[in-house]
Image (cartoon, rainbow, N blue to C red; front, side, top):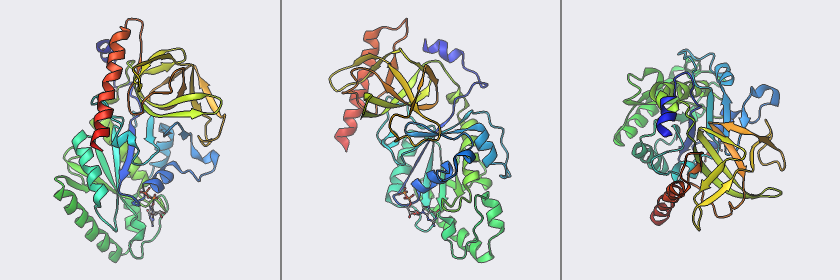
Length: 360
Ligand code: GDP
């Protein structure tokens, strides 16, 4: 079935890449996410951005609009971008099963005033180990002495407005940070000077407060994912789905929040999830997402769906999920599948989760 699904893939049918944000505490991960998401923007202006379960979805049109002033243009082939909402969430640090990572690309946030810090280096090593492509957001450029604010401008436009002193200070700090990254065994360069994106990590200067560089960051995430992982992004019917959290919700009982990385989920699908007391075989009762533009924490505001196609953040309800384990894969039982095989496969994840618990 997998081979069949793979054979049907096409470059004309890509799924949205999934992006995570990580880095040292206080570098501005949350703020950057808010800025990308424009959480404080009026509903009408948000341009189709939807808050999902554990993630925010940016449709193609929104990204095109926000990157229109960036000089290096790119044709957008992906339908959008799914950004995981919780910075440094276990979705990246712990949730990893059988070599199938949740994130296609990551943003590593570095504070330009502080350079590489202990958790930056930890994150770097994690990214290297997992071969996850990433970009560095060199954040808080607005803190450079006498920086002239250019709200939401592409970074090159903002640089043109700065004095010589500001640019000298920027260059000095940038070079220090490039050296620090080199000490970690990686080459890096400002993204618009990058000679080879496969060999050099791209650096995007940003301000999460005034938004400079954020258009460049969005553009770069799209460009890199399209260039470097087209085949990984080809939509397939085979379900790939990770359990983010197990939660009790008033009126719904135990639910699981999942990220559907690939494939389609339907109401009524038979699923197998790894459980504390063995495999849980159950049926999807409801597929839920928050109402557009409503905070996901608002009660009783879920939209029901008959089916949902990747990539998406979804809450699902089914019986018997009480002992489901976050960080494991959700499996769908197809008409030709052997249930026992799938149960065994589901429980493989237990070992991975447990070995992580042992280590930490
Ligand atoms: P996190 O711990 O990485 O999520 O960091 P936060 O997003 O909570 O930011 C830490 C602090 O830095 C907060 O006080 C933010 O307002 C501030 N901050 C974040 N980004 C920027 C930025 O680009 N410029 C300035 N001046 N401050 C920022």
